[in-house]
Amino acid sequence: MEALAMANSTSVSPPITHSTASRPRPSLRLDFRSPLPSISLSNPSFPSRKSSVVVRCSSDGPSNEEIPIEKRFLAFPTIMDINQIRNILPHRFPFLLVDRVIEYNPGVSAVAIKNVTINDNFFPGHFPERPIMPGVLMVEALAQVGGIVMLQPEVGGSRENFFFAGIDKVRFRKPVIAGDTLVMRMTLIKLQKRFGIAKMEGKAYVNGEVVCEGEFLMATGSE
Image 1 (cartoon, rainbow, N blue to C red):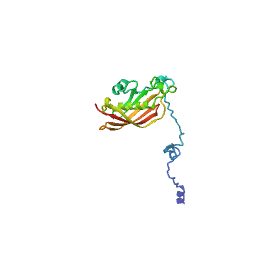
Image 2 (cartoon, helix red, strand yellow):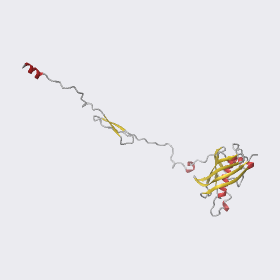
Image 3 (spheres, rainbow, N blue to C red):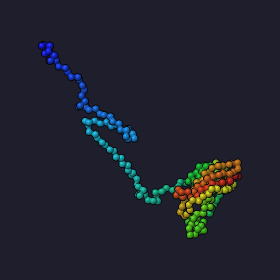
């Protein structure tokens, strides 16, 4: 009886466990549906908080609408002015068709402009009712830009022995009228110094669109 009483009076303690009810553990979730995996931590004891950041960029300067149109557009740069061009090319009025050089890569290429105005002497006859710059003069203007490339020490040209020898694949894309600015690029493709022959590629633009293009053959010499 005493043994039974002692057995009844002995209690077995339950196993010790760590309860997490008061401190829930965050769970890790990976969302693979988005292009980049997003990791979110959720904790049931803390409410989720969302924050957003809005960045506003403002300029202290005036907008385009506030700037007068005469100050809104910059002019072409000047690498060679008309006086420097006259020192290179032998042409004179009324046949000098290059007003300014805006880019020059010695012995390789040049970019120049011709300001086409109603005062040009060819407009009264081409044409009186519809003034259009003659295509042959666009070709001549391009050839003169080529002359600026070729009549340089880097190439060995001479203004006393420089000739326009030929043209090929010339195309006129759009008419050029008074008020346009003809932007012309001439690039040296091949130079045979032994024979004094240079092949060049030329393109003329108005408002970024090609109006004339072709291949040019130049004959050069030395003094």
